[in-house]
Structures are given as structure tokens and as C-alpha cells.
Image (cartoon, rainbow, N blue to C red; front, side, top):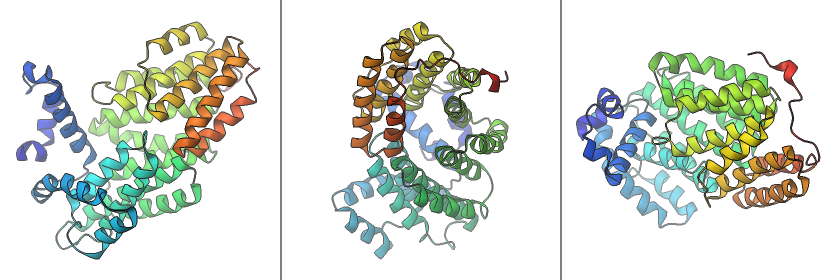
Length: 355
């Protein structure tokens, strides 16, 4: 395990099933453990044996803290050295990222704890430039949670800190990942073209390193941005590209988002019947964010089918779920769509598309 944790080549070989026996791939528990290991290694910009020694206790640390009220958790991680470890900071960031599609308020809290720890790690023990990357990553995760919750001012302040940190770092994955999250913030604040330009800056790094996961994330974000700016043919193209890049076994949540975006893209290019079939093939879920987005997507199909009453009903249910989850920008976007239920979402901006 120690070697597997340290060696990216082992991870790549395992991901290609070159070192994984068939009986392991067929075992759900083994697959879950391997998927966690791969996700962990994908999430680490830098790694060293010291971190391998810290990771086994990181889960226990989180369990300990979770028994305390949030304010006491902050006090615990800032008042002494017990929780001030690189491995625990990474664990908090993984936990925060897992909550972006679920409990976003908890994700924000854990990203805040990670920032507090990252700022207190000893540069005499951990490489200072690696620390800068970790701090940048923590601030960018915190920024992303504030963005999802609609606190754009705080998100922009956190993103400013993230960019300042990674400029002092190694300049590898961390810097490009911050750019990808910055594109979401810039897009949500109304500048789709600038958001797309930021993704153009991030993609070459991941293309060079062969990071298919991040390339899939970029394609997914482009799909959303092109749809938001009514460049529907480009939206559909990027949706298909995301489908080729995102592995549903390794990234089930990203795959779910990709499929829903592709259904919306089908509607926007006038393929409502195909969109209805594709939506029917999607796995249903009771999880709040995905359930709300499914309703939102289905409302677009109802609009295309000229059934405004059903579209409005789906949008009202989606807005209610988004408000419960604290995802205010999504709720506001749904509210705007409610005024358009009588207008089928046909291609209204084909002149902007360039295939």
C-alpha cells in the first residue's frame, strides 16, 4: 500500500487494469477501495512518505472532529498541533469536494478547516512550494463552495488568495486546477467568454500530463458555458466530448452531470424526442442536487414538447429543492426559466456557433 500510495505509475497501471486481477475488478468492495485510492492520488498534487504516514489517521481525525459543534472544530484545528498535518488537510479537501453535489454547507465548513490547517503547516517540515500549492487548492475549494452558495464576493476573495498562493508554488496541477474552478466563478458572475478563455489556459497542461479526468471536467464546464451563452451546437459538441472522457465507473457524479447536460444539449438542438429517451435511460436519484437538476432538465423537454404546465411544475419543484440545499444561484436561474415556459427552447443563436 505504501508503494501504491507513492507511485503514480502504479495507479496508472491499475487504472488500465494491467495490475488488477479480474476477481478484484468483480468485487464491489475491492472496486470501492481502489476507486478511493485512485481518487486520492488524482487529488494529490505532491506526495512524499511523510504524508503516507499521516493518511491512516486522517479519517480518525475527521470522525473525532465531527462529534464537536462547528465552532469547536475550528478551535481544535487552530489551537494546537494535533490536527495540523498535510494528510488531514488533504482528507478534509477530499471530503469537501465530495460535498459539492451534496451537503454544500458542510463542504464549505470543511474547506474552511482545510484553509486554517494549510496556513499553519510548518514550511521547515513540508516543502514551502508544495505548501503554497496546498494553500492555493484549499482556498480555491473554499471559493467554490461560496460560489455554489451564491456568496460571490467571498468566493472572489478566496479565489484571489488561491491564485496568489499557487503563483508561489510548483506550477503544475494545482495552478491549472485553480484555473478550472476560477472559470466556474467567472461564468456564474456573467462573463461566459472570459470563463471559456480561462479553460483554454488550463487545458494544455492536462493534455500534456494525460489527466483525462480534468479534461473531462473542462469539457463538461465548456458544455455548460456554451449552453448558457446560447451557442447550442458547440454545447452539444462539448457534451459529446465530455461523454468520451468521463468514466462513469470512476466518476459517477461527473458522469451523472455529463448525461444531464447532454440531454439539455439535445433539447437545444431540436432533438426533444431523443432527449426524452436519454433522460429516461438516466439513473434516478433522490439526492437533492441531482434530483433538482433532473427536474430542471425535464422542464426543458416539456417546453420543447409545448407542455408549459408540466414545465412550470417541474421548475417549481426544482427551485424548492435548490433553496433547501442553499444553492441560491441555481434557484435564481430556475426562477428566470419559469418566465419562459411558454417559449420552446429552440436554436435561437445558431449564428454564434462555429463547428
